[in-house]
Structure formats: structure tokens, C-alpha cells
Amino acid sequence: MYAQMVKSNATQEDPEKLAAFQARIDAGEKIEPKDWMPEGYRKTLIRQIGQHAHSEIVGQLPEANWITRAPTLERKANLLAKVQDEAGHGLYLYCAAETLGVSRDQLTEKLLNGTMKYSSIFNYPTLTWADMGAVGWLVDGAAIMNQVPLQRTSYGPYARSMVRICKEESFHQRQGYHVMMAMANGTAEQKRMAQDALNRMWYPALMMFGPSDKDSVHSEQSMAWKIKMNTNDELRQKFVDETVPQAEYLGLTVPDDALAWNEATGHYDFSQPDWTEFYDVLQGNGPCNTDRLKARQKAWDNNAWVREAMLAHADKKHARKLAAE
Ligand code: FAQ
Image (cartoon, rainbow, N blue to C red; front, side, top):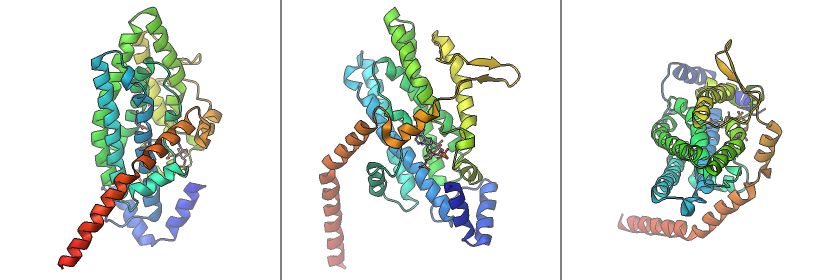
């Protein structure tokens, strides 16, 4: 429905401009902030980049929850650095969105009033230290799978922000896998915790790639505009193919009885996540939706004075400048 709306909006725009724009995309050129772009392209980017930014910021919460309980100083330093990186990713992405004419405040308001989403994965709880391993390994692993191709996306500021983000996500994935290696090779209880974390995170990680291609609303238009470089199912399959051998190396079992290597396709066959659960989480009914939004609202309210002080300072500076002219 949204894809149809985007298309019909686009047809109201100058067909020559639209054709020239599409030709630039097809030729692999980057679109920059001051270039002409169809309104649907701008809106789609704001939606995707904004949701991505919100995910990075909300995504700090499940891991921040464990910083004070990390088992060693080294693990604490790694986790702290990772969580700080996620804040940085959010900022690069909000900046990229700002180049499209939307402010960070406007995007935050939409997050808080529920009109903008963030990734479903962050509505699941992190119950044990092993979850810090599973989040790094699986959640950052899925994020990288999605984001590496986005380094070639057609919008310049988005593509450039992805380059740095991907470098840092690789460290995140490695540190998560390192935690999983220690747990999986530790005591029987640690191995049990590692398996339990994999059991709980596997399907939510698969959901991160979005609904199956037949149900994806935006993929077709977003791929034509190179805002997305792959379909949701392509990336999900790639993730499964790369992650299953990593689970085997850990001596852990992926919680899917139907998982099997398929010689004919050269890929793993696997079970789809429960899509009813996915849409339920998107509707706000996941285990942690309320807590996550409450935490963001609290941070927004508590930091109001900082925004006001900055604005007052900017207003004063502006008034002084005007008086001097
Ligand atoms: N969660 O038509 P499609 C990270 C929505 S990585 C929530 O297929 P699209 C790093 C979708 O928005 C996580 N909503 O949509 C980190 C649309 O609804 P709308 C963030 C989802 O956009 C790690 C509807 O369903 N990564 O945070 C989800 O073409 C560890 C229909 O779906 C990105 O955002 C979902 N999983 O494809 C941080 C990457 N899936 O907007 C901290 C960039 C779909 O019409 C710790 N984004 N929906 O109301 C993308 O590549 C795309 O936006 C997809 C969705 C693939 C997520």
C-alpha cells in the first residue's frame, strides 16, 4: 500500500526529472543532499535512516543493563565501548537524516509518540550474561549482514555513515562471539546459559531482516532506488548460512529441527520465525516495548534543560550578532 502511494506520488512529479534521477541511480551515482530527488525517495530514506538511528539508540538499553554486572574488568571495558559506539551510530544516522530536512527532535518525537519504529529485536529482554555474547554475535551479526551492502546505497550521507558503522559493528560481533566461546567452553552451567541465550535470540535475530519478501511493503521500490541493496529473505538466508557453522564451532545447537544443509541449493533450509509474534511486537506488544519507550521518554524529559540551555545560548548569540550588524 505504501509502495503504491510512493509510486503514485512519484508520477505526479516531472517525468523527465524522474527519469533523469533513476538514470543516475542506475549508473551507480551517489545522490547528495542538495540534488533534486523524488518526494517518495526522501520520505523512504527518512523512514529507514530514522528507524535505524532509533534502533541504535534504543539498542543500547538491553546491553547497558549488564555493564555493572560484567564478570571481569576487560569484559566491562569492551561492553562499555560497544554501548558507546551504538550511541555514536545513532548520532551519525540522525545527522544523515537531518540532511533530508528533518530534525533529530522531530524524529525523536515520532519515536516517542509511536509513529516511528525501531528494530523489533530490542523489545526482547537480556536475562543473563550469556545474552551479552548472543547479542554481539547474533544481533550485531545480523546488523552487519544488512549494513555492509548499505555502504553502497544511493544516498551519499547514508552510505558514508555506514562505512564507519560497519567497521565498529565487526568489533561488536567479534566481542560477542568471544563471550560465547568462553561460555560454551566453560563449565556445564555456562554452556547451558550460552545454549539458552541462543535458543531465545535465534528467531528474534531472524526477524531483524523484516517480513518475508512476499509480505515486504517497501522492498521493490527501495531496491529500485538502491535504498535497499538486497531483499529481506536474501539477507536472512545469508545470515543463516554464515551463522550455523559458527554455532557448530561453539558446540551449540540452533533451535530449529528443520535446519538442514541443502546440497541442491547450496544453502541451509530453515524454519521461518513466527510472523504473528513479529507483527505483535511491532504493534507494541513485545516483552519490553513499554520499558524501552519509558526509558527513552525519561531520558528525553530529564535532558530537556540541556536542549533549552543550548537554544537559549544560540538565541543570545544570534541577538548579539544582529545587534552588531
Ligand atoms: N523491526 O517493507 P518492509 C542495529 C517494518 S541494527 C521493526 O520489509 P523495509 C545495530 C518496516 O519498517 C537494527 N520494524 O520494510 C545494533 C515496515 O514498517 P513501516 C536496525 C520492522 O524498511 C546492534 C514494515 O515492517 N537496522 O540496531 C522490522 O523495506 C546491537 C514492512 O517491512 C536497520 O534499521 C524490524 N525488524 O525493510 C544496535 C537497517 N522489519 O516503516 C545496538 C536499515 C521490518 O512501513 C545493539 N533498515 N519492519 O511502518 C533496513 O534495512 C530496512 O528498513 C528493514 C525493513 C530491512 C529493517
